[in-house]
Length: 436
Image 1 (cartoon, rainbow, N blue to C red):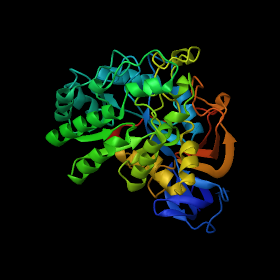
Image 2 (cartoon, rainbow, N blue to C red):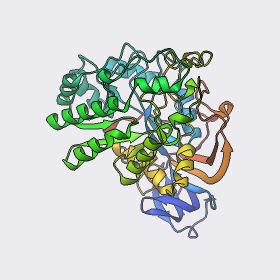
Image 3 (cartoon, rainbow, N blue to C red):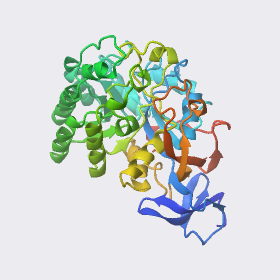
């Protein structure tokens, strides 16, 4: 097509109205036309699918301050390798956490020149910083993260119900909440048995905390999003709140959709996360909630740490850091499980690209449509591979998926129309809510 910088053709372009053969035409980093497959020449993928770049709104980069855990360069290389072209970075576990303007400035400086995908930022809501929230929102953060339970790091303390209400009253913004109630959680015993850790964080902890968040949202009229929903027991509360008109949404993660508590070996602390991976019946209820639209997003909660903090030498679930690093593997992990349940690739695109982009107001991300950024992924949905930790790009290649045979391989990626690879120069941009 005359005047285009790039044309990518595929017989399986996943468009907002469904997959079909098409040619995507790009100029100046944006999609300017979608033509019939045979109408123009260009880079021909054949039967390899063309997807919009995934949008992962739940990534812990940890830089600055805990860069030995993860950093912008390594995290965004891993994202790019997995077909993720946009991430939104959580306000912890970096030092300082992103709870005021000075900390946000430090975070932006740390990211500049290192990022292989586009990166936005969440602010943090902690006790005493309600006056900072409007200022952070005004300079472009996409919303605010809050905990109702100990976050695991002392510099990011939790809010109680009154503190959450004060934060929601301070600014009309999206609040994303780690919802576990501390009164329902017990200290796990020193143990190599996953069941002992699981018992310390029962479904009641999530159900009660989700109820608290929904009650605060009802009283304040605020917009809330439940992070990394693990316990399906909380789903009826979400359904009732939504039916009553509450501004509430929810996400879950690849590990909750594909792993199961009864399959975790003794001492396998790479499976530890908070809230925990639960049983297979619970897992299937999460899939049903996705299919029904009650849970709208699937995001990684990428939360790596040095291997020593995972306590792999002792296998002690009580002492191990709780986090799973999966930003590179989320797409094939979810697709492998989704196709087994009869879901088409378009569903995975909706859960992992379109809905997360819409959640945070990234209007030009997550879709292959005229006017959108030309963030494109060539994805071979039928190609199998075995997960090799040595092939992972995040800083510490610890993963519960090691050795699994998955289906779906990223063959090529374009960021705003530019071909990009994890080994190439960093071409990502910092995103600002005000520009969207």
